Image (cartoon, helix red, strand yellow):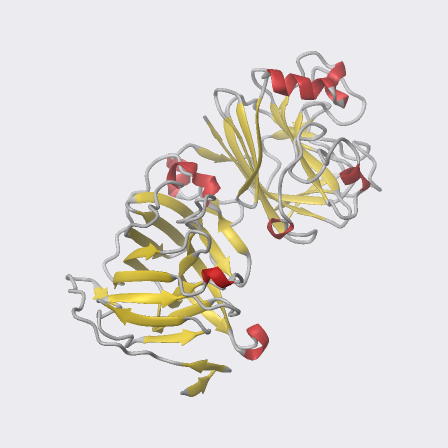
Length: 454
């Protein structure tokens, strides 16, 4: 044993019966016989059995990783993988690193992870930022890929990391697409997740045919119409442009927006600065400073995404199907994706059953979310709102779907009848409407506002 970066490094070596053959341009990372080229961080066990690299769970251990000794930048990685337990999870780290002070000095891995989640949630193939930002691309963002992983069977896993573009496939089905600038290089690692139930101990995860290609890389086509999490502010990739995405905010001007009260953009209360569209605070007074702004265009069926950053105690919202026909005194009327500091703003305790909290359909449907998926005021959150041609609507927060409903359905109309909106006939049922950013008197920042018409 030797001490490296404050953690104990152990390497197991168990003979096996065969090694994986390599193809031209590809390098095998596992010879089928030993763990040469790998090192371990954590208490779980890794061994070679019957030509397979096997991880075995251990109770009372943090996440354990078998890491490559070499680091990689741009690459295509493939492997085959199978799990015994469907109540835990695993993953493949890439462009990852170690924080030597993490886990009380034992070291903690951080970086990108293709998540393997065989539970009923079915997020295998999603991208997670281990030890840092958590979910970048929960697979609820691409529901057509949620059945790609087959429990109890060998599954083919593929990761493509070329420049800022990170893509994943499970059994040939495109899963996650992330554009990010956080890490350009790092090690690859195989995870055995921590467990806290004795009955989960001793469960096995198998890998084989682990290979990598680092030169002459050609990006693989990624299907059509799949949502991209693009962490580069106010930008669209060629893939997004080809699939119909357009920016509603260019990061420099207010082009495409106007006041909800007239045809000009507000002369005060809003500013564009450092790539951000900011509504300025005015002591929490609704629509008394600059007032709401709306898109020049109207939309019917669409996929809308934006980043937002709240200040402590802030209240705002993004409204849709705004017709401007109600002639309301305060904020314009429309269906609202609520933006709120649930901890400090009193509105979180009003309404019914939490239906005025962050990401809720304001005053109608509560967003079902857990605290770990909320980035507190001062941090950026990503929202997504999808309205399908059949009037099915979905709200997402940081990649996780938090509510869905059918606009115009009987259930929807019953909710409207119990809400503040009951005074407006056929509320929220217009065929098309503007997108609105609300001035509720609190400072809120927006960026990366993009839309695709469906």
